[in-house]
Amino acid sequence: MRRRAYISVFDKDDIVDFAKELIKNKFEIVSTGGTYDLLKKNGILATEVSEVTGFPEMLSGKVKSLHPAIFGGILADVTKSTEVSEIQKLNICPFDMVVVNLYPFEKIAQQTDNVDELIKNIDIGGVALLRAGAKNYKNVTVICDKSDYNRAINANESLRQEFALKTFELTSNYDSIIYSKLSEQFNSVGQEYIYPCSTYRFKKVQDLRYGENPHQKAGLYEFCQGGLGNPPYHSPLTIHYSLLWGKELSYNNILDMTAATNIVSEFYDVPAVAIVKHLAPCGVALGKNILEAYQKAFDCDPISAFGGIVAFSQEINEEVAKLLNSVFLEVIIAPSYTEKALEILKSKKNIRLIKLGTSLEQYKQVSNEEIKITPFGVLIQEADKKELDKDTFKVVTKVKPTTEQIEDAIFAWKVCKHAKSNAIVIAKNFKTLAIGQGQTNRVCTMEWALDYACDKSKDAVAASDGFFPAIDNIQAAVQGRIGLIIQPGGSIKDNDVIAEADKYGIAMITTGIRHFKH
Image (cartoon, rainbow, N blue to C red; front, side):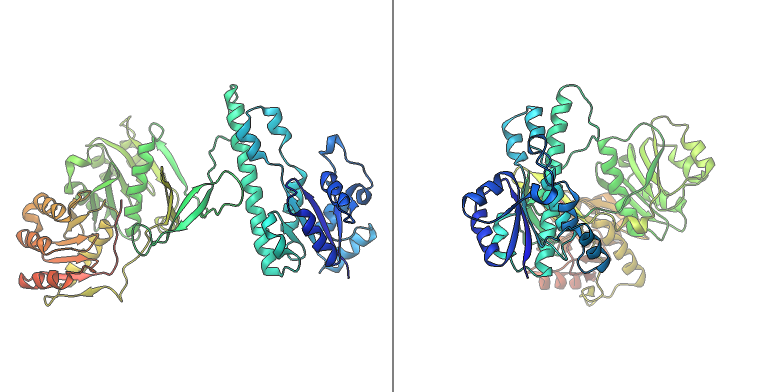
C-alpha cells in the first residue's frame, strides 16, 4: 500500500536524500515551488501541488497549499469511516506525512528593520500545514526539523506525539518572534501596541543539581529567539483581585503584596496576618480572631510596619479598620471587607485596598516555578512548596518539647521559609517576636533576633532556615533562654550541636528540610 507525503521546505539541506528514502518506502510525494523543482532535478518523482488542487500558485507563491484538497487530506481521521467517506466523495486522498520548514523570519529580523521585508518573510501556508499535521498526529507524521528525517519514515504513535509537540512549540515560538519584532517596529513609528506584552522563551542549557533547596528541581536556560526551545513554564491558575481604593499599584507594591500573601496562605484556615516591608516579613501572627492576629503581628515590629503591606487571611471588620487607620500603610490585602471597614479605610487617600478574589487555599497552588534572569543565564526552579514531613520531623534531644512548643515551632518554621537567608524566627504563642534575616552569618542573625526579642525570648522557639554549622548558635540561644529550636539538621556537626542543646536543656527538632531564600 502506497503512502503519501507533502513536502515543502525553505531549508532544502538533506531533503533530496530524505525524499529518495520515502520513494524506497513506497511514498508518493506532493510538493511545491522550489522544493518540487529540486526534487525533479534530482530525478525524484513528485506531483506538483497545482495538479492536486486544480489551481495554479497565486500572488507570487503566497497561495498554493491553502486548499481543501490538501488540508482535507492532512486533517482527515482515517479511523473514522464518515470522514473517509467524505474525502473519497471529493476525490481527496489522505496524507500520511507532512514535511515543512518555515521562512526564516528570525534570521531576517536580525538583519533588517524594514517592515515590508519582515512581512514578506512571514510564513502562512507552512505554519498552517504544520499545525494541521500536528493536530492529526494519530494519523499523520509531521516533520518540522530536518534532524528528524532519519526517524520519521516508520514513526509509531509515541514518536508522532513527540513530533507534534515539537511542531506546536515551533509554531508558537515563530508567532512570538513575529509579534515581538513587529511590535518594536510599529511602536517605533508612534503606534501603540495592540497587545502590550513581552514574550520570553527559554531553551534549557542544563539541569542543575537542585534549586535554592535540595527539594526544588532547577535548570539553567538561555533566551530562545527561535528554533526548538524547551519552555519550562506552566501557566498558573488565574489570581482574581481588585483594587477597591487608592492609586494604581506600583512594581514594589505588587512584589510586597505577593510576599505578604504567600505568608498568610500558609495559614489559610485560621485568622492570620502578615506585615511585610521591602519583601521582608516584619510581623506575623495567628489569633483567636482577625483583630487579635493583627494586634499581635503589629506588636512584633511597629516601627518597620510603618509604610508596610499587610495581608489578612479573613475579612477586615470595623474594629480592625480603626487600628489600620492609626498608622500609615501602603497596601492592605484581604479576602473581603465589611462596608463599615471600607468606609473607615477610604478616609485615607494614600492607602491601597485590595480584595483578593481567589481563596488562599487555591492561591497556594498558583506559582509552580520561579524565574530569575541573570547575565549568566535564566534560572528556573520549582517553587518552594515543601511541607513538613512526619518521617523527617524528629525530636533529637533528650529534652522533649511541650505540645504548645511544637505548635509554635511549626508556626515559626512556616514563617522562616519566607524570610531571607540566613533566617532565624523567634516566636511564642503564634506570634513572631523577632525575624532575623539577610545576614551572611547565621550566628549574627541569631544574636540579632534574640537581642530584638529581649526578655520575651524566654521559653520561646527559634526556627532556622538552614542547619547549624557549629555550637555557637546554641550558645547564643542559651543566652536568650530559648526553650526549643527547630532546624533542618544535616550538618557534619549535628552530634555536637545536639549535645550542646542537651547540655543546656534546650529541646530540638530537626525537619530534614532546608528553606533557603535568596
